[in-house]
Length: 113
Image 1 (cartoon, rainbow, N blue to C red):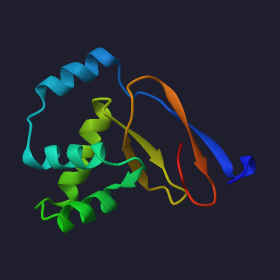
Image 2: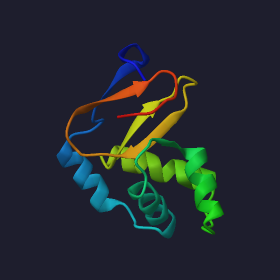
Image 3: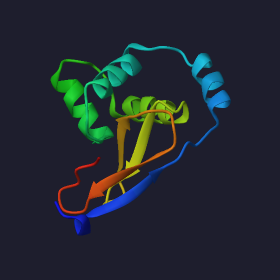
Image 4: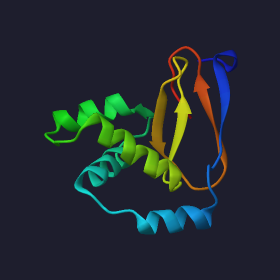
């Protein structure tokens, strides 16, 4: 990977910390959301909803794809995960810190730092 292969992607919060904390406190904890949270906690790379869904199903977790999307969107809204758009326009998710930051994405292999 060379410097010409890298592109910088800015990750911005979609809501303020206070409103995110308020929304998070109103959300109902569910088995499915907990499974998505646990899966992301063990990942170091960005994953699409389809990849997360497939992995959860392989692990024996009964969860629908729409439920995975809803859980991920709620986690984005709550500031718990970052979302990036792939070259294909698909959203990819990863658990990251709450502070404003950037990611470097390799244009060849998609590896994110």
